[in-house]
Length: 418
Image (cartoon, rainbow, N blue to C red; front, side, top):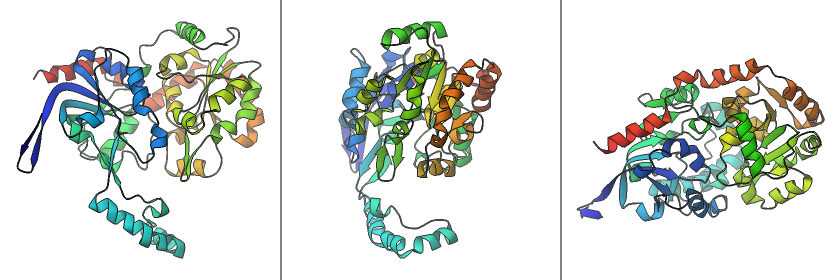
């Protein structure tokens, strides 16, 4: 119930742990935290309307399907401004889009003054003198602003990490300042980035709990063999897992298309499972069908337990993003497939963590794609475990430095009773 008193709105506080789910893949991320405390958890499904709605097409519907029957959930649109939960966990991927006085002024500035600065060439001068182009968002300006929503629906708010795919230059997002009481972190790397920018931030290192306590490699292979038809048990399994490539003018699937001529040559000797990024399938619904026709084993299962999938494979082919660090955490042999041009430059300039990884593992450019078969054969046959063990320790430290996510979850349940 909402109680009005003068200019204040008092929202009813729900004595539960709420988990704000923004994307279907987050259910797997949260699973290690929620599985033992479900009676004390309610999932908040992001069903807000976004101006970039194509990316979130049927998002809420897919999340609800994956949650399944018997799981307590509510729609964000139903609780926003009405209920507040005692404890809230969020990946910070839900942003409330609304037009405000400030956002509209920024829009006016970008459209008129910003565009003038850009087309007159003054942007280069300002960039050289003050370190900023001062064009605002230019032609990409929007009248609305995007605002963190966590404080509106949560009392104690916890940031849940969605991967170590972060920029050392821009992480954490400046909008997070004051939005979270506690930050869960994957490693000392993201923990240091947070505390360096937010000096008073409280952090807990949880590792990658979604990749802990997994079945053995043999059991994982059996699971994947049963779930993905067409696997040849006599061939090694390669996982080609791709990110979404975003340019200013939109999304592209070029990171897949550019490498198909070379990865296709692996099909005679290996089972090649490709798992395109979910957003790739939104912008190109035929991509899965095209890859299947070429002979790849396409995995588009919603709610896939990625830990089991990684555990089952002999080598990971990745490009950018969280999958690079996931493979390292899982101690998997790894080859990175580069893009060319603007995207590669952008990631290096923004100092993404996976750019550092490229100094430690086999990395190929498209121009040298013909050598992919030889590199795969060499890496698969190399049984030196010191390499993968050293990489995991370099990026994630010793396993004893991670806090047990199950114990953390039960401690938060105890807080509900206080």
